[in-house]
Amino acid sequence: MSASRTRKTERPALSLSIQLGDGIAALPASRAQLRRWVAAAIEADAALTLRFVGQAEGRMLNREYRGRDYATNVLTFAYDLPAGPAAAAPPSERAPAVQADIVICVPVLEREARERRIPLAHHLGHLVVHGVLHACGHDHEHDEEARDMEAREIALLARFGIPDPYQA
Image (cartoon, rainbow, N blue to C red; front, side, top):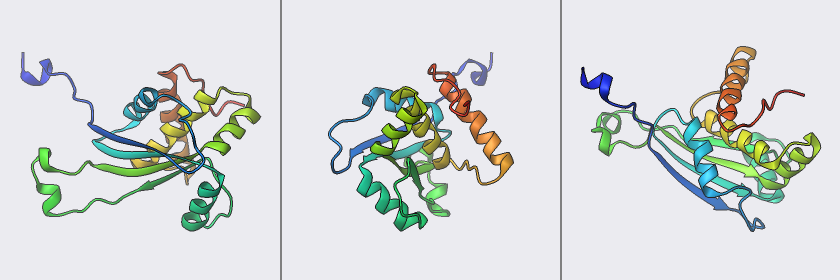
């Protein structure tokens, strides 16, 4: 048997930092659960920060970076990686292929979960997966992209027993 047939497929490496913004006293899920959601959604080695923020910081970031003067549920700031010699380095010396900050506004998360009458953990799982997919380069600006991204989200969330978030 060839080595490629006997070797398990390696999962992408993940470096995950979790931050609490001003006014956020506790995480809305365990660190272990957050890591599981992120690890399921990454498609390449990744260095990500999940930052949980309050209304004021969420609004400021959305206004500053998207020109919208309100707090939104999730923002993803994906960083372009340098090309050239850094990309040609041996795998052990390369920067992760995906680098991003994912910001989740806890008051918006909680309000939306209440309004939709869904468990907070289900909505949080969806926002984490959604943000990570954006970090990996997925988008939903056009209908076909949106269908593809939503299908990925639905499949990933199903692994965790979270129902389709796009069903009414």
